Length: 133
Image (cartoon, rainbow, N blue to C red; front, top):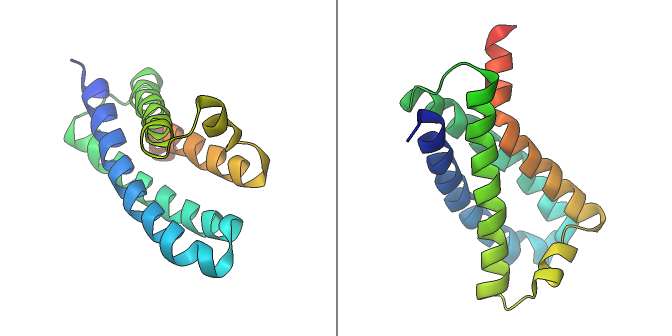
């Protein structure tokens, strides 16, 4: 198994665990006070900071090649696993249909979520571009 694949799996697992913890705090403590959209907007930069730290550490830990392909493989695999896991939680634990889960990505809240997830997936590549400038 390549370094990028191992790092991508670890990146997904660590970010999913962190997101599950932060999401629990968001839903139980922040949303009731401030509402859903402000809570998601507040959570997103925190998750991106966690993603930055995780991606940087895992790139070094697994010696992921400093190439666009390797970094996209790491981030792309992590993003695909994250989206599948979130759908699994929505369908399996929350009793949503796939259509109900996907409709959660519509609207402003969904746009914020998708932007954050996209940046999560691109983070290993963004780290590479950061070191080249």
